[in-house]
Image 1 (spheres, one colour):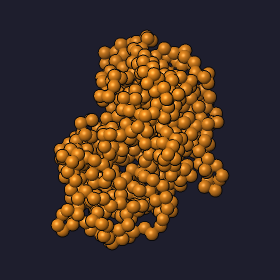
Image 2: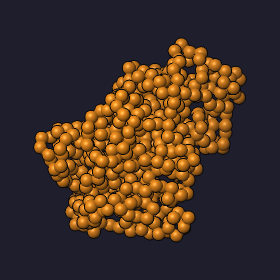
Image 3: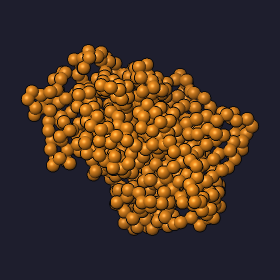
Image 4: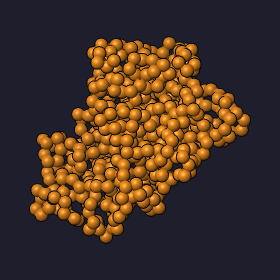
Length: 533
């Protein structure tokens, strides 16, 4: 089908424009004042690269881009192992300068000889963190964190950070550096690091569990381990995630199943030749989270705190958007500008992820409980309330015509919670719960639109100025459940984009991907609210 790309893409753009940019035809209640909504959400990105590793731009340049795209917080989070360049003075933004550690006399690299390269524990502790301090001084209203992209033994990558010591007098990033030295799959230094650290002698998945247990034991309220682009090389299974979450429930609490590299010709860099789980992305999201009743829902059906996150994974402009340009994590915090509050917010699961600024505010509650929390009910019914804002201002799309996309619909997805599965149970390796997870309701501007599974949309209340309000009762609660939201600017049954039930189709139907296509295909996902009966 996609060999007829030119014709179909033109057809798609026209259809999407009609579906996504047409103003609502439903009754609008114009409000002079915006509805009261929780304003304690901050936007952030915690997976991005510079020339300290395999990025193309200096760390100062990347810090500036985080700020210019109006993120509230960000973390420098790039690979462990050993690398060649000093990112303070190397990058395409610096006339292509590439200053090698080996060019200094003497070479400042410490530890086991590594062909003149510097181990990441050292560059984090002695160089990168100093640039983080400079960024904090330049952008005093922003929260800038030193993290690290862990080469996960036996698997692929994970975004990590430990904020301990980073926001005190005489601060440092030594805990992050120690984690890298001890546990990174590509760090072969055995000389003790900065403080005679003891290196793990484990290998593979056992080393991964050891590392997570170490962080859980030592930094349970101060760190995170979030598997990155988990579908890309099919090196994670649901059994792995269950093991990891069991070992460190306070630090390993979710995944980046909405990967970065969204500008890549293979969206997210997911492709059959890489053996990607699900082959490709679906509306920019990996199959683990995009499939209703898939792996993510299987984790949630155990009642696990296993949340969805989205980050840019910025390396270069050829295949990546800048941090905050396309994807954002909206994280609830109890105190703005506070790294501990951000860490707590990530762990709480009170997070929703958005592409292309499709929405910029969401209030989702069940019986007074919000995203990541658990409501307790008696009887079989619960009232679900949703308030969402679709901004009228242009987004960051400089690549095409859809600069002010309009929210087409919101799906409410529900699943049964049946309890945690024991590692000895044969179901521990099963990642499908399609029989107990479904779209239970859909809301849009007009109502009465039927999908192929018999769901008939209901009309939301349009409060004006981009605000949409939804209140409805769900009366089929026979046991513990969870509810989560999904929304898009794409309608139902749009060629090569969605099926007749509004599910995103494989992005390789639109191959090769471009920035323009990506900005025409927008989604948001909320994390769940659990309901105990």
